[in-house]
Length: 372
Image (cartoon, rainbow, N blue to C red; front, side, top):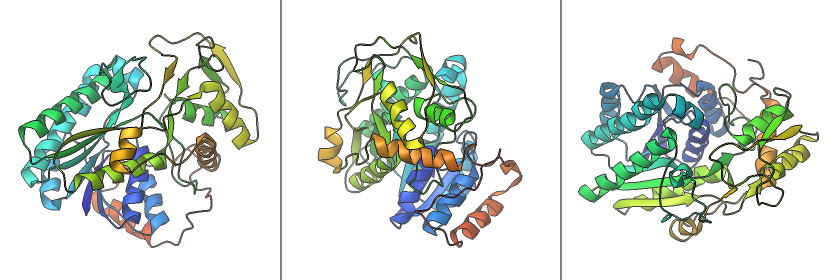
């Protein structure tokens, strides 16, 4: 199957591209590298000895996207591309609506023109807002509380209406909870720009010495240890969920939605303690005031995905933090900085082919890219 992956150089995208290539799919990536690096795909190519085709393009460049999709004629699209920081979305709501919603509209127009109507969309548990109805099921009322979450909700609604209006479309929306971890090789992982917005990469940067301590927002919640509880899912389990959804759509039409989570919550302190065990060192933290809008607990009911997709999360918290620490220890400053704008598409693809021809071990950590 030829699969177009938007945002395929990003954290979840790169792990999904790796699994797609390992399964024998023909993979094409489009990415503008606004929050990612071509290096992630070079390492993907080296890990599986196969290279995706890569185009540096922004989904807001509608003419370019139309041309690429028409020329490629993909069988399906997995759509990751979009801005994703909640705090930034509050400060820059128009950027989020323009990037996420308009970018998706451009993609859908291009798919329609090319006759490709199979789509797996990267949604989010943020569409559930501040619901305290636990566990969160796919029928829980949606009510996003920030511009980022609202863009995901608007896109979900748009896709549902599209599938209802045109029965030729096959669309899956995957609502995932808190992606963490990294590939077991330590070669690809999460590389947030600036200060991490999420707990796990922040804890990892404290453990590796890039930051002083973790601020734990609230220690008086009605939970096991007073700190907030969230559903963390290993990025490779999450990637596998996208492949399962892709398979599900092959002989079905309509609009479908699934939660991708473990169904179990871990507290902030449990995460910090697990990370300390993995790193073999203390991870300093302090408990500070709660943040407005945070709920005590948030976790998925993943039963629907298990019954319909045959998918479930296989990796527990200990493996999540061990893999995350292996990535962070071997890449303390993430992927190396590079002037990727100086590469045209032909040069980028030559680099991927060269990486794919290099013998690599997928099981041994690698210390490349430790300096920024």
